Length: 120
Image 1 (tube, one colour):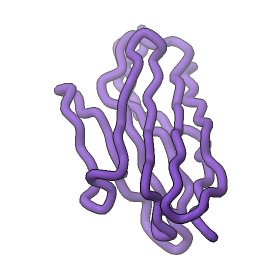
Image 2 (cartoon, helix red, strand yellow):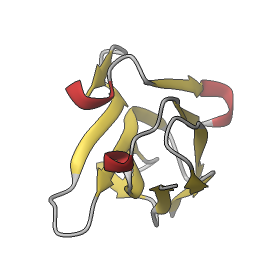
Image 3 (cartoon, one colour):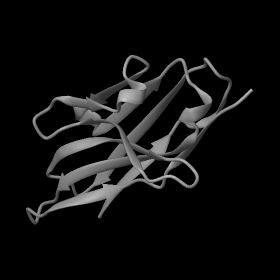
Image 4 (spheres, one colour):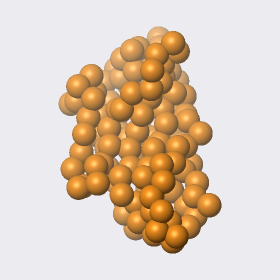
């Protein structure tokens, strides 16, 4: 069993900052990729930022220069530092990971989501 547990969402004023965390736990052999998606009401889920299998980072154009993804490999944790938040950043943020378990199968896992609301 593998679990992704997110934390750090909440209500923040425009221009404010938040830091999201996502910790992977369970039967993990390797984490091939890990990152963040978001889904606003009535919208499709979209990539926000992620570490790829090659170790590079991808960011949505809308968050470049404002959001930074980082990770702690020893703790199987990925972070999303968000600054200069805008109302259009309001969404449920989901952690996503491609994890290889001891049976050597690569699977995609999702966290339960954490709400980020940017409003005055």
